[in-house]
Structure formats: C-alpha cells, structure tokens
Length: 269
Image 1 (tube, rainbow, N blue to C red):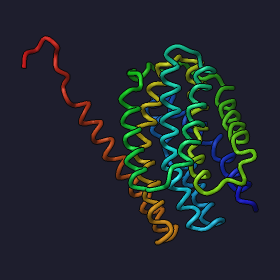
Image 2: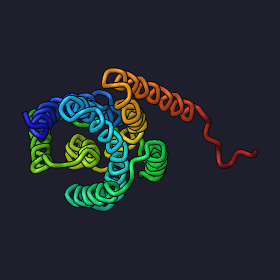
Image 3: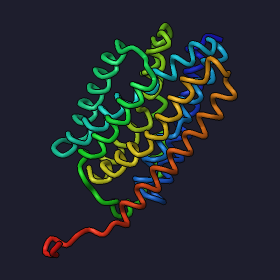
C-alpha cells in the first residue's frame, strides 16, 4: 500500500476517536486538561512508525526533525487564533491562524535541520507564546454538549484530515514531518468551543496545549537523533521516556509557580 494512503487511513481512523475522547475530557476536567492531551504524540508518533517501516529509518528520522520544527508552526497557529479571538468570531480567527501556520511551515521548510538548534528555537517559541497568550482562568463548567455535537466534531476532524492530506503524497521527509503536527485536533476543538462558549475557554485550552508541546518537542528531538543509529524500538522507547520526563518536569514547575504567594500591592518589602 502506498505510504500516503497508509497515513491517510491512519489519520482518518485516529482523528474522530481522539476528538470524541478529548471532548468528553474537556467537559469533565476542563479545557486546560484537554489542551495538554492534544499535545500527545498519538498522531505524529503513529506517522513516524509507518514512515520507518515504509520509507526507512533515515527518512523517518528526518521527518521527526521536521515534526520538531513544526511545533513552531503550531505556536504561530495558537498565537494567531488567540490574539484574533479578542476581537473576532471563530471563522476569522481560524483564517488568520491557518494562514500563520501555512506561512510558518513554508518558511521552516527552507531551514536546515540541526536538532539541538531547532530544539532551542522551539523551546523559545513555546515560552514566548505562553507568555503572550491572553490570560484567562479556567472557565466555569461548560453547558451540556448537545447529542449531535460530538459526532459533528468527529465528522469535522475526519473531513479536515481528508482535505489536508489530499494531494500530499509526494512530499519529502522534511515537509512530511513539518506537516505531521497539522492542528486537526486543535482546529476542531477551538471552533466548537469558541462558537458555543466564547474565547475565554479557548485561551485556557491553547495555553494547556503549549505546555504539552514541551513534552512533544522532547519526543521528536529524541527520535530524530536516535532513530537512524539505534532503530525504531530503542528510539521510540527513549522518545516516550523523554516525553514523560519533560511532562513531569513541566507539571512540577507549574505547580511550584502556583504555590508562590502573590505579593499584595500594598504590602511593603
């Protein structure tokens, strides 16, 4: 089977199920938890495994490095959507954010792949976007989701995958990797959340996504470095370990920051 068809079938099968799970989690645990989970490597990790089997480990390693750089495009998407959501409704926000993602991806496709440099650039982009995203506390409990909405979200995700992957069969390894983090899950969740609940929960979701992308970056960088010399099993195991390790570190840092008491403006030194 052609690699593009393999990837298409994989993404179409994963996207609707994952969207349903994340939608239920957002309703139960909040939009920040949903944002963290969207950063999971389910989509890109599966693509890299298929590429390793069908195109070889060198190709997949280059794609992993491309996926690492693709996080910067995700940062551009999140920033564009969040800032425009302060003034506009979701269709305009989606157009602005998608344009940012596309332009950023085209620019990054010309950047040489140097994993340490790329990782540093990704970390800087994530820190900057977290710092400048509009601030919003976790929104109050969302109103009940109509019965039709989760199936509609699943259908939307599948249609987005079909649209995005049409004609993408002749991509090289770097562009394949750059496009693997295409924000199908993010698009589906933000447009439904924004249309029903306004921009505040979208900001919470996008900030959770940015925190989760630190772990995703660690996974991509580890696989990119280890896949060619050590093979799929070792590189994936190390990548998962890096993912979990960075996730724990980020959560510990965030918990520590929340425990720091805020100084009363009227309180003296």
